[in-house]
Length: 242
Figure (cartoon, rainbow, N blue to C red):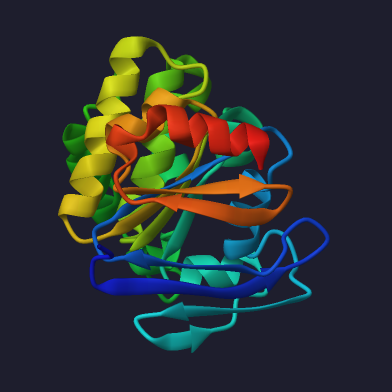
């Protein structure tokens, strides 16, 4: 059963997506699953305003929102943790602090003056919350492990107080221990009232964290599973057979 509706996607269509309709509940982790080319990543990018739509409506808390670009998405509380964190999710030459604050600078400034003490305190809080392992917040992102880089990208959206987080292959290239930490962070995010849409090619990842799963095939949603942990074989077969 869908939790209280938070997000509604209506008739999302472009050259890759075909009449996509679904809802996301408050405090829900919704999974997107399908083979390579199924449209998983393209759907996240369309929600985030990175890919243009030919048609479609987006609603948040029952209110229609216009998202023409990623900046529009960020402004209404949407954050994307992309598949390729090294080229799309972070600037590895910048510090942890700079990466985490990129989307929230206006919240830590007054006129043309920044509030560095407030920024540092917010960063200390989120580093502790996410267990980010680093010598300090001023070291370059390039010095961190893959798991800690991913945590900093997530931290960027927590600092911004985003209410919908989009994860594309959230644990790709991350060791097993760090994977479990990312899963715990995702569950804590929804327990605190935000919602998550996660696209992944790892079936066990879906079963571990998702409340519901949508199967995509050639840009269309072809099936929904409300109890994914009980449906592993059916999920895999649906993604293959279309």
